[in-house]
Amino acid sequence: MHTANVQELKELLLKTDEEFRQLATQHHQLDDRLHELSGKSYLSAPEQLEEITLKKRKLQLKDRMEDILRRHRGDAPGPFGSQPAISH
Image (cartoon, rainbow, N blue to C red; front, side, top):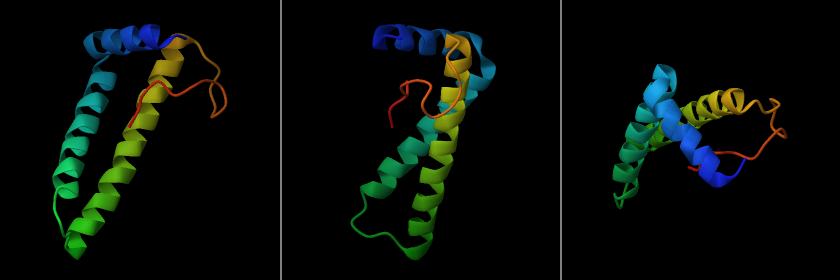
């Protein structure tokens, strides 16, 4: 699927799929918090743990969003079935 088509599908899912929309919102919120943490010159131990936890959760959300995109595209599931449609 071409990049433009993937983008169109993502936009459609944001409007029509409640789960996808919630995942995208959460992904964006985690990304915002990670940017806040990365802007600090020093992270305390709890902040370092938070950063690791946020990165893992963000990846889980991205994987679930990819599953939804793959289902709507009709691609074969699995890590080698298609190119990722969502960038970090």
